[in-house]
Image 1 (cartoon, helix red, strand yellow):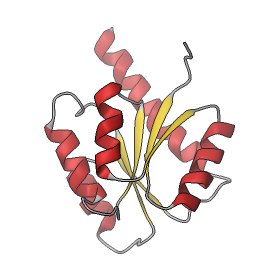
Image 2: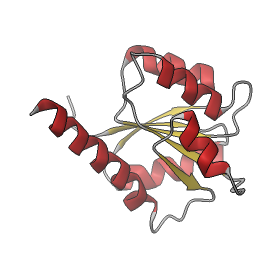
Image 3: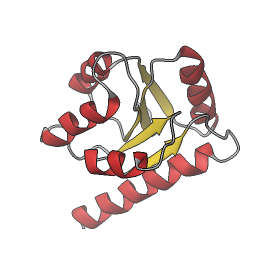
Image 4: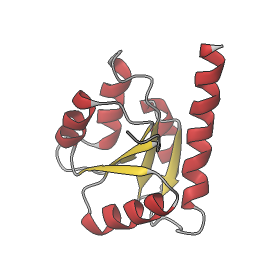
Length: 134
């Protein structure tokens, strides 16, 4: 069994999936991929990742709607979700935060800083866990 942190990447674009996966694996994370809300929900039935990177524009159910669904479910509401979007418009960050995301990263990702951005959200969840535990 590995103690690598697990990140679920919910992204329908295969090129974006491959880039995000490559960067995160170089940073030492285990990456699981889902191309739709349904695939993400299937992954979450089996186990909870340490973090979800959620594309806002998914086919079918969009990423913010899925985030609201996850936050309403006691089984998944503690998993931090970070929104990923290529359409960084004014107000998008606020919409993502209102949906329950802990943060927001614009695409295309900057491969030089992406690992540090993701690590910041994982560090926050690590401290929260320590505060709850003891």
